[in-house]
Length: 350
View 1 (cartoon, helix red, strand yellow):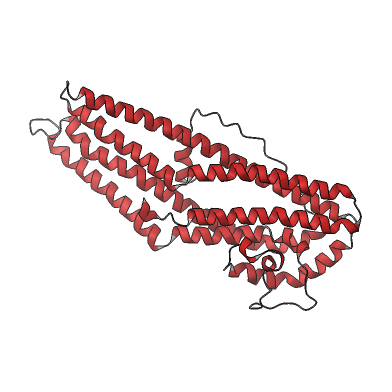
View 2 (tube, one colour; view 1 turned 30 degrees about the horizontal axis):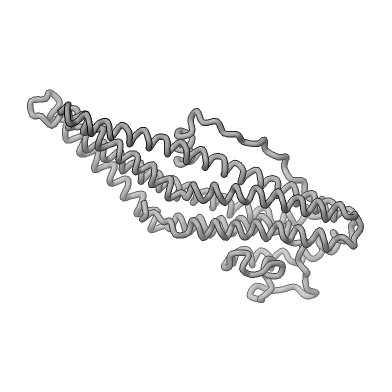
């Protein structure tokens, strides 16, 4: 489990998350199994890369914010403990607090330097985009009108997404996806030709798409619920931290103790760190967009079911194709919105 996941799990201790049960794994049409198996290794590799750099980037900015607050604590604790007084028994060890503060600041600087130099965020975004586009290739393949002659890398129509969707509905520059499309197109052409000749394929393809969309709906429902709960918990903690800071400041007018200085120094720093990490994670906007997408996916699933219920004969293939294309376009647009949402947030902001 990554650091940012551990931190969020700690913050959500005791929170009641009303999460729906996970849907069953999607069952693709048997006839598409060779195509899915050909794509699976490429998707697995890039998905692992996306998870690696996504965890590094998100753990990085959570660590920077929280360690900054801890550095403030290390700076104030010697005063609160009285170690700065030369008469104190532990005064000779006061330098260890300063050393600890320098060490924490060095760790923060190291995280920033490594994350910025190695472009954790950029590698995460690129890998996640490639992973998403690769994951949906088997779903997109039946929608592609394959040309009689194979395409080669560099051709305008090598990208299956460009052939099916408006170019604005997916992110450009996924060269790995284009190369994969060109490499497996002969297999896809043969598979799709045989698939549409199977009377049961339309039914299986539509139901598979619905199961995949249900999986996405479940994922975004979890993102929505967790982000709303995280916002409420952090806002509650910040309310308590602000209230304790205010009480400490008022008591300081009466009681002159260095422990109150610790309260009025560290608590605001911790509250600011939690708020900054929450803002950098775009928790509010991710929660709102995920809530909207849950509703949109419900509507898309119903459209596919309606198109499928009209008839099970081949003449209805156009309606099923149109409804599936609309559902996939919805997911691609959501991914592009997420990409543009996360892109401006770099480690320097932390």
